[in-house]
Image (cartoon, rainbow, N blue to C red; front, side, top):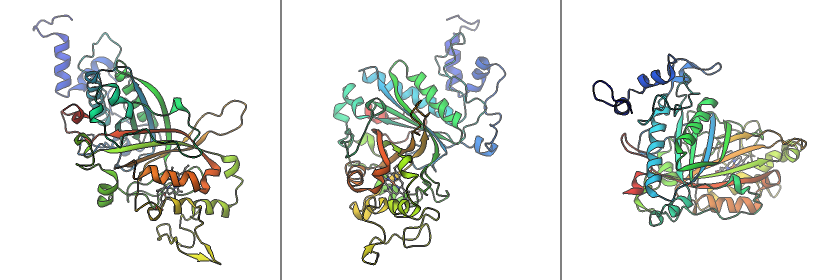
Amino acid sequence: LSESRSGITRRDALQGVAALGLGAGLDHALFGSRGVGASSRRGIEPTVAQAAVPFHGANQAGIATPAQDYLCFAAFDLTTDAADELRLLLQQWTAAAAAITAGQLYTPASQQEDEAPEDPGEALELGPARLTVTFGIGPGALERTGLTSRKPAELRPLPSFQGDDLEPARSGGDLCVQACAEDPQVVFHAVHLLARVASSAAVLRWSQIGFGRTSSTSTSQKTPRNLMGFKDGTANIRAEEEDAMNRFVWVKRGDGPAWMAGGTYLIVRRIRMLFDVWDTTTLEGQERVFGRYKVSGAPLGAAGEFDPIDLHATRNGEPVIPASAHIRLASPQYNAGQRILRRGYSYSEATEAGTGEIDAGLFFIAFQRSPSRQFVPIQRRLAAEDALNHTTVHTSSAIFACPPGVTPGGFIGEGLFR
Ligand code: HEM
């Protein structure tokens, strides 16, 4: 390092700049005259591009946050067994996420002007676009780093379910990052940057791009449609339902290790839709699969989307909502009163040459307080009886513990190391 005339090394100066939050000056040094957050992209409202979701708080953002339109999800494998290196990675990820969710370039204290910029820069000028970055820790990470005594009983690999056709290389992981925003390039950038930041301690294992939220997670949102054309998210938990969030989503003190209080468990399932079957099913047949009308989203036998579901109603001696209907089997009435927070995205991949088949469907994401009492029994029932199984196949699966949120100066998962 070259000593400056005032006796302060360049590294000291850079650290000072970063500590003072004056990253913009250094960004200028690294990226010349290209400013940050100046404009938005075509098709994205400037007010949406400039909107930021606070990164700090009691819970991590990206869970109760009204679901944004784009997702980039990534699972990582640790390349170290040292708890100190895991801690350093979580500290660096926290710093990077705090910067980019505010629409700033990430410039670590160690950045040297003659080194490749840590931040690849493709989100420059795009604004935060409501970016949230949510971190999770997989079952293997704590054992690997000698933190087994801190492992919650709920953080167990999921059992296999009837009909699963999982691709191991696209399942599991020691750590995960869920980036959601209103701009596809902003979510890609988040994972690109965080993979780069992780490079000495973790490598990307698999990732998934999602377009189009398939759930409403706030009363302020209209219910979107999934790729089967049905409104999805109607009976979901809304962030405004504070009691339900506390009962079904946020981990409480006493549920397990203290470091998870205020956190939640994240389950992802990549569910491919078999359109050759689905697209040749009659409208009535499709509606019987879900137990709802396609256009209005109302439960069968009712008129409005949000009308109550009557699982006891019969017509000519037959249940109006069929025994194998998705909403019957997923209903709290069939699952000991349990609910989950769904926050999934539609996905679509390039068609494999010569197959003519579309690989698209739902990248299902659910947050819950207790996988063993919520997702697992619900999915067991669905896997055995759901009419939807004739037209879907689960190809990827993973579970992660999402620690609580942080205050400025803290880092995600800090409680693990106390
Ligand atoms: C490709 C797969 C899936 C599709 C297309 C799908 C679609 C839907 C649709 C259209 C609804 C009705 C509207 C609504 O309330 O949101 C619904 C409800 C629901 N789904 Fe799914 N779903 C899928 C997989 C799953 C899985 C794997 C689970 C959990 C294990 C699940 C849990 C639920 C729950 C809890 C409800 C609300 C039931 C109620 O209380 O009325 N879904 N889903």
